[in-house]
Length: 252
Image: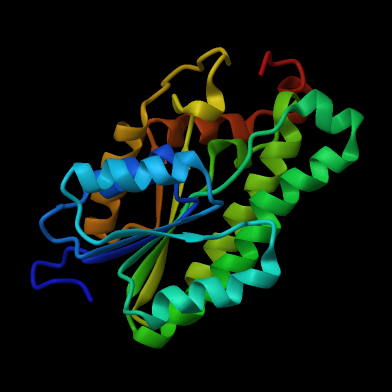
């Protein structure tokens, strides 16, 4: 349950080693947090995330095994977390960038990307929404991407998975309206993380801490959609208006 100051006390991270999600947990008032559950595939990275948050003074940090691809296990994992106590904020932060050329050459790679980024998110998102609706409060934060605003030739497979995720998250937010629970859709641009290491940086590149600050601010303001950084909203509005023949010629 949110504390008397309206700050979250319990957080669930789906994609427990996500650098953006972990930065968001650190950006929340740590003295208010009583429970943080990092759900992800067992790995040294997940163990390190638990240790790092604990060392930073975050209370009640634990991990549970969660695999976005194993949708059959989602019900027991998510219900198990909620059965142990209400959750105020859920960060749906798992996803894979993949390699566009490899995915085009090997459709199985594309299916894997879609399974994690979209199918897994639908499975987990609906289950989380049901529990948030049942407890009558809480926010599901969905990490989408500006790549979903308009699919580009250079990464249209990844972009299409994020477009599907974004549409799903918006509809889920509408479905939860009036229940006390809500959805916040976050659309980052290029973020410096392990996933983007070695890739050329795009204009308005940011760090995980920058995105985290935007997320925490949006939570406090009750926002439903936010870009990270904010000016990307104008950029993407312009790109969506470019006629397709001209859009194909852009070096993006």
